[in-house]
Length: 476
Image (cartoon, rainbow, N blue to C red):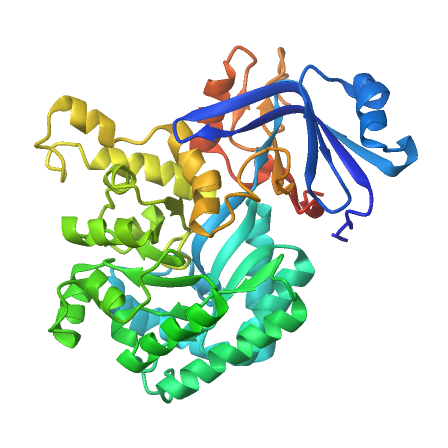
């Protein structure tokens, strides 16, 4: 498709649904949201139709009729929802989604991940993989993604270029790994890793000087892969640039044992990052499955964030993260697809999985089986809560809570138009048409429609996607 530029003011009319707080979705019907040519929401009017918008809103905003485009929802089956935020995704691993066999984390890295990432030093191959990855994530409603790239500077820069041209809001991380990795895929030294990281930062600065759409993100792969010198160097670079950071923590028990072996003087996995200065308010920690109380308290104290990746955690048999426990500690949590540990580019899939694995914690034999019933019930996440993690929670994790994740005046229009399948009152036996797996019969309440979307929805329901007011995906 040809991407439209937000050179006009825009009015969106109909039903809007977004997270008001962690446990509460807000439903706004018969509402108008006005977005200026910069992509910012400048007005929200309830009890408003198209005629009222023309008669009152346009004059108030100083808009002329010929410079406004209008998008309406279809009653009962369509609604606007904030764009999803993917807080942890490996773009070069996209071709491997669904391929993990019986592997666990460390075997999977050596068998599938490192060979694929290394092969993307071929720019034609990288372009093919990254273009499809971005297309698919946009098609599933992901307007913002925190990407891990590879150690190759040119291929990493290409990912930034493609996100910028295709309109996806993105954080691009050139991966640092100078201590542990195969001979064919490893940084030569800490100095080389840091120089390569600076090269990508400067490339993105030339591309998007204020990092409004695409931003660098400092990316030590995980503690075992990085030398002490690299972690210290990234800490200093972060202080100089104030850029965000991302890494992995406590994903797998063998990985934790490896950390203990490499860093015998550290108290814990989290302490390794803290000791070398990279556990701070800008850090996104992926997984955080097997944290101790002390580690969680330290992460909360440092105001670091967590990317919860339930699909990957299940696929690689890594474990079940205790999201309610993290939230109760005051730790901000978002959702990640973690492709290709995760098998899907869909944050909606991650949301439904987050709901289900929270149930697993309290099932007979689960980690929290010994708690009182009230405590077990509290550990389970609701549909409203996982949608919060997919939007506002993710925005907090990537440091954009004031810009994206909800529909509020002053925020940017990062949004998706969702269309559900309205089943007609009479169906001919030889007629079967569908707009996806979410069948709406008309008697469902809106919270029931949303629940059906969470558990049955997919990219077929995502009709249009906007980032900063720009149409970046539309079903043909």
